[in-house]
Image 1 (cartoon, rainbow, N blue to C red):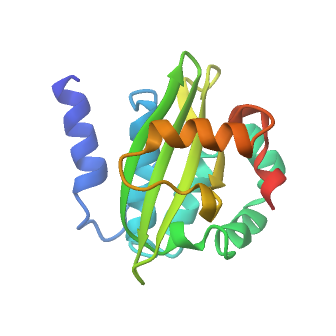
Image 2 (cartoon, one colour):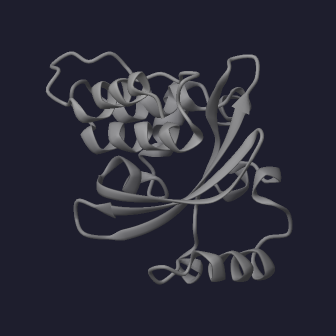
Length: 179
């Protein structure tokens, strides 16, 4: 990773003292994992430096097909404040584990620790948007409790999760399927 990319990430993620920060936006210099990390960092800082900072950042990183189903912004905001997604808005810590990546598609397991000490697992599906030259989130799926893995069992989880719960690969199922 180049020095300028590290500097960009440092300014984007590490520096949290800016009072009136602009929203974080998708950028061609971000990898798929960095796109997930930027959103989680924004959720971690929610509601500062501005109201619904994390939710607005997530909206900016939502792919066009995601926005068609979850939008407009008011509906997206309501969805993120629902019981299913509230742990994201209420997160205190997180861990990202890459599951799969190919040319234009990536999938990450994300473990969220909420401010009230709950642990919740999500799957982030990202698609590289050629016309925008950046990674964007196509879906965020809550993993059902029975499929949430014990620490360090992601490889085993994949087999169990796909064979007993899924009928199609994750990128073929839209987030509305779970609402």
